[in-house]
Image (tube, rainbow, N blue to C red; front, top):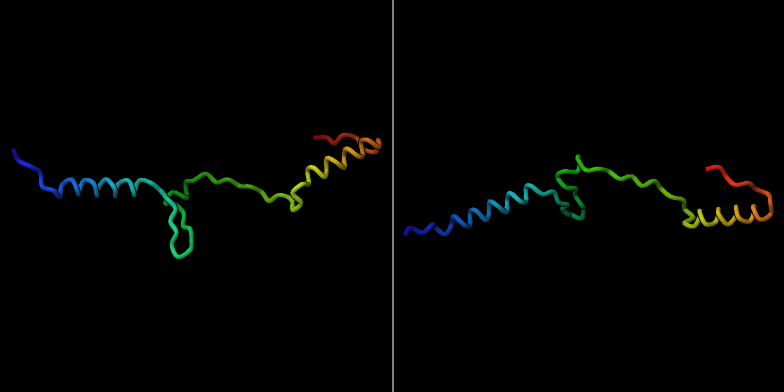
Length: 79
């Protein structure tokens, strides 16, 4: 019975690791910069518009509308 040389499994393991590294995109940090994955051109982008500076603006607006409605000075806003 003939045995395989020891370097064949090591080469297969190295080849598998190299293939998996090339097949997956990952972020890398180099010199303090976070670099994108290799597939960043095909990623779907998400845009989050800047919100108001006052974080409770919806609540403040709702309270003002409530106060005006209670006084009978405003009608319901059209949405």
